[in-house]
Image 1 (cartoon, helix red, strand yellow):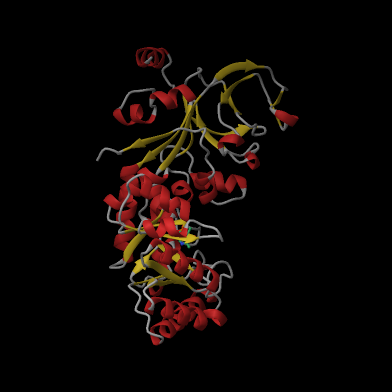
Image 2 (cartoon, helix red, strand yellow):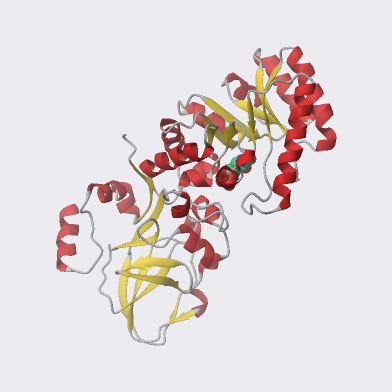
Length: 406
Ligand SMILES: *Cc1c(COP(=O)(O)O)cnc(C)c1O
């Protein structure tokens, strides 16, 4: 197979090279090649990005956020690599995500913050997972689970300082802090953290950033006043880690920056921030054929060829996470040129107009990555953010890990 690829590459000069370097053979694993698509995950870049966040955090510890399958990059390999690079904490939304880390043998401090009534509190306590609490009902649920587990629960109290999403309101804070202190005195919980989350950290000049940190400082003062002695205070996501130094306290929670992507235009590009994108989405053309001028391409004929041309088929569609909004807009590097996909995104495939450039089935195309368009380019083309572009890449796309064996 490799031999055939090399021969065909030689027969078609000008095509993108096939398996020629160790990095490429790591990308095109047997599974990826058989599928014709891959999300290559560069763990060396992830480790460097964690290092960059540690440097920027200037003394605060780093909690690498690995929720949502590490933003589509793969929970366990990314968690392990982040740990290697000095992230002393890992953060996930769901309690089940934290339990998945433990099942895979990932140790150390892990915080999970999104438990609904009925969540696996006791299993998390058994597995030494830190749990966020935002309300009396969850505090009581955690305390009851601690009692049944016969083990104290480590709790981070979350205060809503202005996002109006998770967290206890300022109005409820005194009751929550006092109740937590009472349960701590009974030996059922240990309040190890106080925390909050920003609404507008990606827009550093927004007045809400200063009012949220001020509200957090008051909440911390109040909690200390009732006798709580938290080990960690944390507020900063990626954007705040980079641009709101007063929000770093002694722990920061970067997510998107770990994956090498910018948290927002006002914060700077990946390169400005010293970050390297970790995911590269690539495919092998599933077919190439000649079509005449004036033919409609894909459902609804939203693309019509202008001249006789060749069209290539990319075996990925919205079932794989390509946004359907990418019609005639999603960028692709194919047959040596930057193009946009032709017509609508189907469930399983998209088409690209290759013009008169030579191409063959099996040629590699780059949808995004360091050597092609970026996830930000896809986000701009689809009216969304790079977070969503990488996170939505689905399980039908095999992940290939580069730098995994360091
Ligand atoms: C997702 C999330 C983060 C990380 O946010 P980024 O913008 O990706 O850095 C941090 N904290 C909480 C509570 C989150 O939900």
